[in-house]
Image (tube, rainbow, N blue to C red; front, side, top):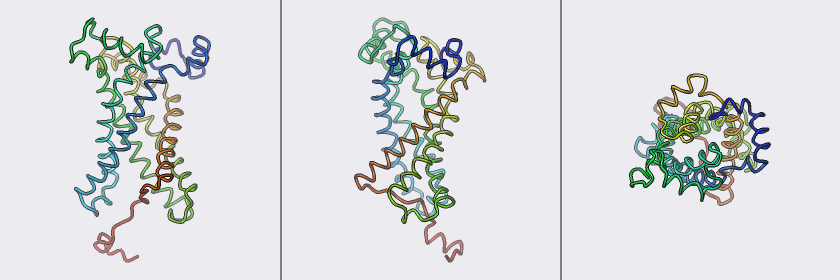
Length: 281
């Protein structure tokens, strides 16, 4: 939908054409770089988020952590995603080539050496910097897509969980069973995923075209797509990202439950701040 809108006019047409041309296997094209790339990205994203959240919280103190918690979530997630995308970029470049350039390569083992040798600048032998450029030409648009996405993903999730326990769930989190808590996690994750997809979709369209077309630039792709073109495929991406984000949070929280790892409850106002504000409850 993003790289060939004339051919794939809708999500249903896209499924139909893909299955007709490549069979059911066509829907799994690029699974290997997706699996490896997003595993590495997930490791960095969730891991560094926890690290940066604690680090920034220690820097600003307990009271400011509560008062500015949304800003803390945004800053920690943006910092984590910066490093996560460096891990993801080479695999993302391979995935897009496999999916959008028929005949280029069918597997990761075929694709990676081709990108390395015949890099996007047209040189047959890549110097170290050109080699890096081949795999990282999409890293800036990737940051443009993933950093807003992740900021929305973590901040929206954290605040949605807080609101669900406050206004929807009829009892405090401490009184909920593990299963009930995981349901709240899934629902909050899906809500966050919908907003993530909308925020990051224009940059996702740019990344897809950029990695498909040799010699293209982010600015050039933006001009070519125009204001309407960058929103092509949004419905498909909302369905995908909503489900993906919900499952990510559900699995992440389930792993924490299984291994008895710390799962901090929604934030509460510190006693010292309550005293300052004259809150006596």
